[in-house]
Amino acid sequence: MAKPVGNITRGTTNANRLRRVDRWLAGPQAWRLRTGTSGDGGNPDGGPKPGPHGPLVVDLGYGATPITAVELQHRLAAVNPAVHVAGIEIEPGRVTAAKPLEHAGLSFHLGGFEIPVAGNPVMVRAFNVLRQYEEADVPAIWAMVCSRLAPGGILVDGTCDEIGRLSSWVAVKPGGPVSLTLSLRFGAFALPSDVAERLPKALIHHNVPGEKIHTFLQALDNAWLQAAPLGAFGARQRWVAGCQSLRTAGWPVRDGPARWRLGELTVDWAAVSPSVQL
Image (cartoon, rainbow, N blue to C red; front, side):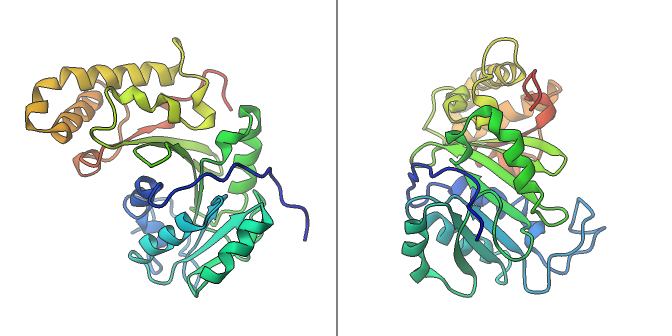
């Protein structure tokens, strides 16, 4: 086996830490998991159906314990029981420790960004991994991972706090990043821009005046503050009003109230991309 591509990371993880991104994968992205969807129906990208043995999903760099890979398989199996999750880790001891948990829908492999598994994944989740690399490394890593995707597949590169209250991720396709999603637990922030410390590596150093991500977070804070009167009805109603306000102001906000009520907000990448393009 060739040497895995990447570096051993700290591996910090916690049970239920990635629940927010898993909810998104099993929600707006669930069509990628459904075998039997047609190119003009459930597949917005027009790609072919997943393989006959069920869709492959990769948990890339799952960390010191395999709990998040186990949780991912359980959550996605609710969408399609045939899904297979492959957990990939670059540290051999972590793979050895995870092996006893393998079953028909879950396997663990030694490897890195080259994704050394048979088949092409419809989803790759890489959370709290690229955060530990240099920003200059990000484009090549994105390209390598995306080269392994199935047609219509997606890479999710994200970061969150230690217990998953504040989370953000970039959705990346072979042509480049397409969206940024913020997902915040109500009560865990004073201002939405508190998530800035948990932005993905591609954005975290660009949250400065003059950059799009800074402008967006300021607009989100203002929308949150202006919706303060609705706080009497709960933080959820206040958040939904803020999201609607951003859309009305012309921000390319995706989805709608059903996702906003979860403390989630997705915006087109073009609205937040760095001035120096990755």
